[in-house]
Amino acid sequence: MTDDRYSRQELFRPIGEEGQQLIKKKHVLLVGAGALGTGNAESLVRAGVGKLTIVDRDYVETSNLQRQQLYSELDAQKKLPKAIAAKYRLEQINHAVKIEAHVLDAAWTDLLELAGETDLILDATDNYETRLMLNDVSHKLGIPWIYGACVGSSGMTFTIIPGETPCFQCLWNKMPTAGGQTCDTAGIISPAVGMVVSYQTADALKILVEDKESLSGKLITFDLWQNTHTAIQVRKLKSSSCPTCGTEPTYPYLSAEHTMKTAVLCGRDTVQIRPAVKKNLHLPDLNAIFTTQGLPVQYNHFLLSVEMNEKRMVVFEDGRVLIHGTNDVAEAKKMYHRIFS
Ligand SMILES: [Zn+2]
Image (cartoon, rainbow, N blue to C red; front, side, top):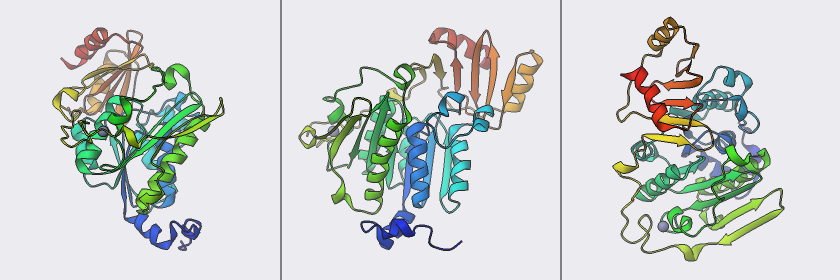
């Protein structure tokens, strides 16, 4: 292959050949491989980032295909974990980028370990619990992170540089929220995703080429259907008493009590159960057990899906289980113990 692959990006003056060399040396941690995650991943891999580590806890479903740009109908049929399906596709797009995929509901300990050797953390999660952990990880390690969120036709993004900008905690205490709306209750259109991805990837490139002066430092919000767009100066929100970015940080989200075990996945009619200690399940054995019981099972190298009592359970190798069709934690736990006791 000729080496003109990045010629248009190098012609762009703020990057240039020097910037391209910097991009190639950098390692990005991407947390979440849904709509925002696949958009950011594709842009960064096409831009020639050196290494991308992807963490995601979910698998591909048909309802994802409208906006999660790396996935195909075949991925949904096979119920491939998103991190794995994303890795396969990204390797086809640019073989020179090292892609590391983790099928994982990341606890703070995982995030701290995975972020350790990276230059930048990209938030493409769908929940505040993980964002607050990322915020602490970022400040503890001194690594920038880029917050992004979208729902309906609206979105929000902010780039956090430890020691310079206010952190997510500082903002979160004072920020307007989307009233608890999620894309599972309010829906989402793909242009809203694309807009947030564009802001996130542009700031990512600025950070990777070490051009921090070009960051706006503003909280961006927009609604593409209401035709509104704001860029809010938030510098004054930085608080010296903040437990994450203040003068005496305690990193409150990096503690045992935030190792989530059971969670109702918001708006998805799904309960997730994560064992306190990771297991190492042999899925073919489980498959054999369920098949003998006459239960409908489907499995691949990474997960097993079984229907039981009009609910569907998805079991991952590390022992994590998603129970679809219920929001009742007690009922979900009962089903879990039927299998693992
Ligand atoms: Zn703060």
